[in-house]
Length: 288
Image 1 (tube, rainbow, N blue to C red):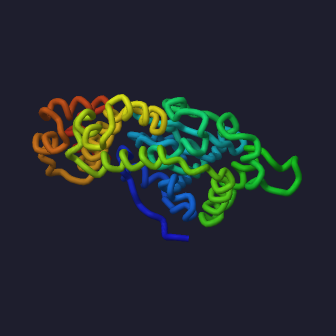
Image 2 (spheres, rainbow, N blue to C red; image 1 turned 90 degrees about the vertical axis):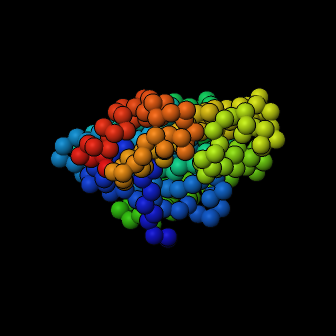
Image 3 (cartoon, one colour; image 1 turned 180 degrees about the horizontal axis):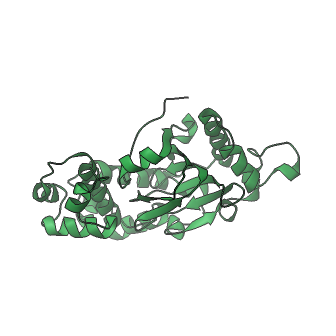
């Protein structure tokens, strides 16, 4: 198994989170990497409650979770969260998640547009067919199948390698058919993420040889949010990362580099997403 990877993009106050939980990332099995970006694991054992805050990526996540205050292990499919995602952690617990590439989840549930999951967190059994929960369940008989046993097989092992193997087994069993539209959507989102000069949806559509209508429909069906939302979210991620790691950020210059008309527009979007202005976040004890 590859060594755990560290990536805190989108985490508000990453140093505060990492001081309270064990956070790791792992690569999925090679056949899954076309659609699944990473596995992420969090374990905690807290004497006092802690609220974690995430500025979500335009990704669908499949998670298996155990929290001693919530009963047996369970699984969820979480669509793109439009606002700040907050999770209160108490006592002891674990989350083992698979983060899909933006645009990469649709082949796993091809009959449903990804916009259906946006802003939602649904039990895995409401998204995947019952047959999906047989291959990772503990035991051989039919009484040992089902989503709860699948969740237990993922979150119970103390060893990360065993958890990775259980997630691999579950996702490989779903065996999605190739979908060129998913590949197109994933490529377009990756270009938005990597290229700061992508600022206007109309210009981006023209550059990619698509009509505005075709681009909007593709993103609704495969990403779950609009191209404009994706552009703005990745720019906020970049601003958040800089605010978390540097004290010498030139905010007017950064606003221009990210395509904002002025600093005020960047501050407005940052504040609406994170909850505080960038300079206040930067100067907080847990910010930078």
